[in-house]
Length: 412
Image 1 (cartoon, rainbow, N blue to C red):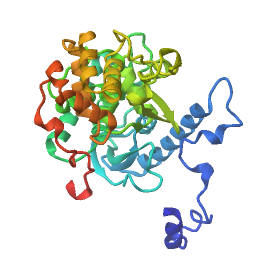
Image 2: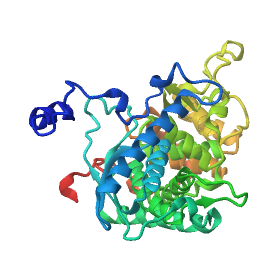
Image 3: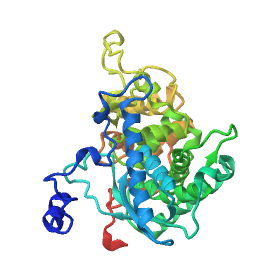
Image 4: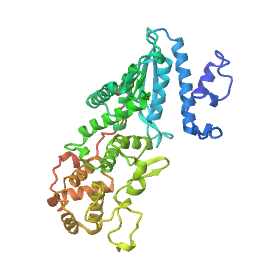
């Protein structure tokens, strides 16, 4: 679209640049694995070749911008991607071309309801990332390496400060965009220290800094939104499930985002997919499962129940707190309040702190129109509340507000 209008206006001024009726797709800087179907092999996959091609083209673009700028000159990049691989590539391209990352500013430019944005890898907000051509040339290839152990603490600190500043500013961004917005200051720390190596003298890529930033900001979000909660005390899979709902505020989101959240707490989401049924793939994205997609039907005979569902509500103990809470929801839904009270007491969930913490967390992260939230609410405030004795702020049961609406350009 942009090319068509630019050609209409500028063809007379730059005839060579606008000689084509459409853009040159081969020269376009995009990471498209489909372009490398015929050349991929054992040494490099389609995705790896696409990323290499994208990084090289972006480096060429930034190098040309670097060449024409005077020392001290400024370049601003508008970036809406949220996958770590894309940020890793962007950072290396900037570093290779010589730019110094000086500032980042989150704004909202994308409308999530427009065609092409739904289920895309773009963030709802845009990050304006500013790079400056230094007055003194830098030579990254001959620079003295910095140990990652010396950079990690500064990386974590920069991410936390950026997240706190955004949360305190009153700007209405989604929690995902709070994480993305912290990438800029994090990458500035990394770029200033580049090249970065580990204790084995192996080069550390920018993605390591981004993973650290994601972990740090996620903890800030837990402290901010999960009142009185310490999810670190829960089992890893339950913690991952809760964090996914907290950060993404939706049951479907980017696979890469879910994988990164898992890595941060030691969960390989691909390994747990089949055995726990906590999530499924939906068009390449993650879709979280509720209790009805995980718990066997208690009203059926044991021999008639689906073996594909991992949670048996008749069990007296469960390997994960999430399994226990989902089973309780199922029993409440199928058998009612009185039998659920007996079920809870038989399994000592009336004194199980992790069961209570999981139920309380789900009440705080699930959308109020979700069936699981309604069942969690009923468990927390019905006659079962006398058994569980949960302590809640009134805000937990308030109607969903405008908390997740996006900020606008005017808000900045």
